[in-house]
Amino acid sequence: MRPHVVVNVAMSADGKLSTRERRQVRISGNEDFLRVDRLRAASDAVMVGIGTVLADDPSLTVKSDELKRERRAQGRDEHPVRVVVDSAARIPLTASVLHKGKGRRVVAVSRHADLAHVTDLKKIATVVVAGETKVDLTELLNELGRMGVRQLMVEGGGTLIAGLFADGLVDEVYIYTGNIIIGGKDAPTPADGEGFLKEDEFPRLVLLDATPTGDGILLHWRVEEPK
Image (tube, rainbow, N blue to C red; front, side, top):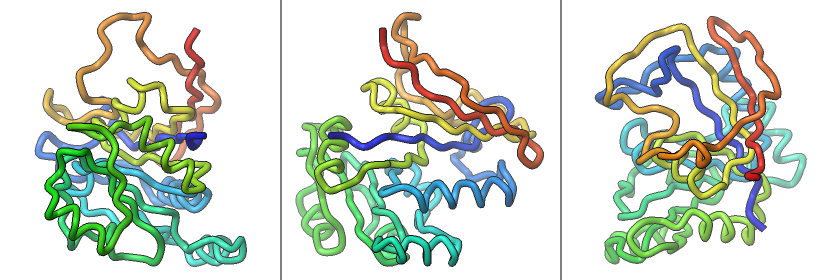
C-alpha cells in the first residue's frame, strides 16, 4: 500500500518557487517555517527531487528539539526517512541530505543510472531501483509503503511534483503564497514538466482551509478522486 502523499510548497504571488537561475528565495516567514517543521516531524518520510538537492543542498531534518524529543518518545528516529528521486544518480556523495542528522536515507534511481556511483551510494544510503530511464514513481511509493512509510511529505521540486500529479499519487497539497513577485518565464513553478493538455486530465482540488499567515496566505487542498 502506497503512502499518503502530502505536497508542501512555498511560492511567490505569481506562482514561482525560485528565480530562473534556481536561486533559493525566502518566500515565507518564521511562522510558516514552524508549520513546515511540524508537518515534517509528523511524516514518516520526506522526499525531494535531485534538482532541489543540487540547487539548495537541504538536509530535510526536523529542526525543533521539542519535535525531535516527541519523535523519540514515540519510538521513532529523530528525523523522518529522507528520500531523493535521482534517475541518473547525480547526487553528490557529500550532499547534506546523506549525512546531516541520524536516520535512514533512500535514493531512488533508474536502471540506467551510473553503476559505479550507485555502488558508492549503497555504502551510505538505501538505493531503490525503479524504472528504466527515469524513476517509476508508483513503483517507488509502493516500495516506500513496504518499508513502513505511511505518510510521505514532498517538498519539491516542480518536476517531481508534476510527475506525482501525472501518476495520480498526490492526496493533499499545502501551498504558502508569499507577498513577492519573482517573474521569469523560465522560473520554476510548483508543477513543471510537460503539463496536462486536456481539461479532463487536470487534477482537481478541494479547498479545505485558507489561513492568512505572516505576509501571505496558506492554502490547504485535498486532491479530488478521479471520476
